View 1 (tube, rainbow, N blue to C red):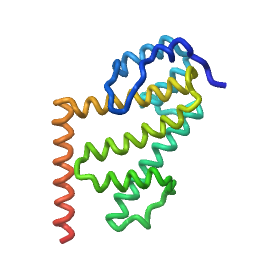
View 2 (view 1 turned 90 degrees about the vertical axis):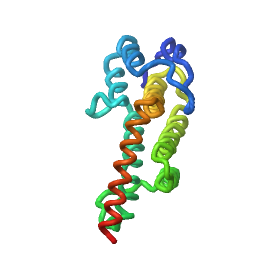
View 3 (view 1 turned 30 degrees about the vertical axis):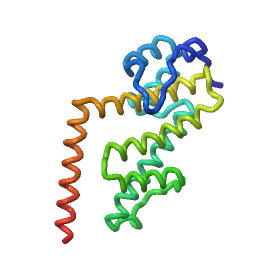
Amino acid sequence: MSSSYYYFAATLPTLHFNGSTPFSLDVFRSDCQRLLRQEDYEDVERVLGLRFDRPRNGLVIEWQTFIRQIQVEVAWHRLSHEGAGAALNFERGFDPDVVDIINQAFKEEDLFEAEKMVMRLQWDRLERMALNHFFDFEFILIYAEKLKMLERISVCVSEQGKQLFDKIEQNAMKLKDEKIRMFQ
């Protein structure tokens, strides 16, 4: 049975995919540490990527499985275009939403837009997972993941983040060009 956190959940502002973060992850995390039971707080840390041991909560396990499915699809897509797709030794999930978005993202010229497409897929999955969770611990976990996504987007669109992202994109394009020349 999930814990209920009526007051805490009710005080959290609504998050929107194209919106801004109402507060930082650090503020949210300290509120969680102060207001949640210790074992619940540890699952919040797992969602935020601060702990890597096995989660207690089924929603966290479901979310991690979904994220792994995206990672596998991305890896399969990359390797299959290099001719190694058939040799991969892991199981693809074949979720049609995941396959479709990953295919679209790989066709996108702008890497940040491709990343946002994948993040939108994740956001939409969280929205479905949030159904019937209003003031319970699962609501808090979903909120943590959404806040983490919004903070990542805000860093990428900041001037410093944009410069870093542009540098990563340039390096990725150089590597791609080098591979193409190598196979010619």
